[in-house]
Length: 488
Image (cartoon, rainbow, N blue to C red):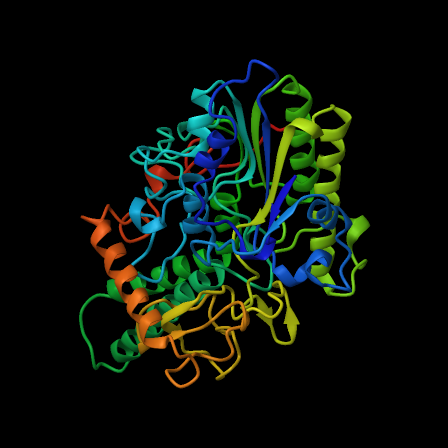
């Protein structure tokens, strides 16, 4: 079994090519290998016992590390999920497929947007399907859904090499419950509240002016402003349920089977589907990607695990994730598949350090590593709210461009084997080979930039990442998007 450094996440790793190199042709002497990919969401490297955590219990993931291989130089292509997952599936930097952002929207923002993983991208699922593998994905997708209508499913997993899909087309969000941390609900509520207040203030000002004889004409503008204030205020109060209904969706294949998603049963359903897939495809060969909803906020955890850990709700969720990994591995063994299945465990990126409310931390721990990632060269770094904080508290994630970013010339250079936490930048005085290394870094960057060619359409920028009502997936006539077709 093979497991990388989990907190470093989904890597810019040509996984499809590696799988084919393992078995380039069907073997006449035995069956082809199966591939079971277990993917956590926002898990920190410091959250696991196999990386030194003494207070969280992760025996099943630790056993994978003990019996397998830890890939200690294995980097994520991005620090957020959409571009990182695009890179994982394709083995290409996100910018090459248009899955990178030039604005602040670094992930797909809603189910009803036109952006997503382009259909012409080659995923390892497509390659293996062409070679006769049964391919399935269970859990989180977050790589787009539709292009021109709510039914074209151009970015759907079934158009990217997977035979079956059971899960959420977007992501688990705090907005799927009324959690303390909100990705979009709170911002929309504030904006609508301000607009409602402005409309109400305008109505009062016009009414006072009219009554005092300072203004003349009809009362129509006053009535219009009062009505607008009422509508905007009502929308603000309804925003939580509306966001939940629109973005927290459960699909089986291309059919919506539950809208909104019943989070209390999500973990059991993921396990049921994973175990069922292994039973149904035990004759192989197969590729199964289990893309967990754990350990992303709102940290939905079943009652048996609540209060079990020493690290609050986040720790409880990590321990439940480990239990789920153990259940899936047990099913693999029960079906007699362990000896011919490559198991790969990873996280899409490191722990979400900014997931904090007051003193309560809802994100993971990245151990001794700097921020949410570890890189050798920094041309830019975020301006932290408090110098040395290591995270952009008060913001959802750190910015990559703009006023909140500091540029470095020359870039910050670190030697990771001696300084994995990137605490001591190298200088010409501390490193004799500094000029040579810096020259090689600059040349590598120039080669990379020249290789990009014309930029593909930005899938995460406006207008591809703007919500459009005609793209909104709905299991009834829009906006009556409520259904519960999934029988447990």
